[in-house]
Image (tube, rainbow, N blue to C red; front, side, top):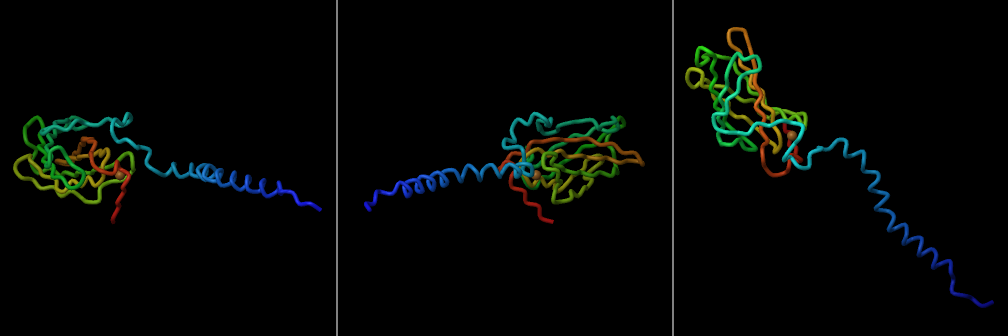
Length: 176
Ligand SMILES: [Cu+2]
């Protein structure tokens, strides 16, 4: 019997080629569940949902219940990714607020985590406090709550800054 060029082998080759081409497409469909856990902000510029403050030296805000006024200056200026020292001038209607109990708590609302370091507060002069370090260890939006307690009453204010830097906030390095 005469043997023809087998059409079967040609067909197998075609199927194999089709499978090879098809594989990457199949793989990528399985990746969708991963996006749930990752950061949803590929561009930390122009976040529509979180209102940020434009930093200036001596940026001044009233606390939420109007008890105090806080004037903030950062060193370096503007605040950077990493360690900062914040100078806080706290006053009320009577002037500088002495001997207040102050906490400074940075928080990344987009990532749901705080700072690696606890800012130590020291009063330099009447109503003038230094918070050091204010550790903003990632690029992105940091919402820092400053709470001032004096004579058993407390009030707080938020300073929200978009911290620039490498990584676009994707490099979480949580030690501790
Ligand atoms: Cu983060």
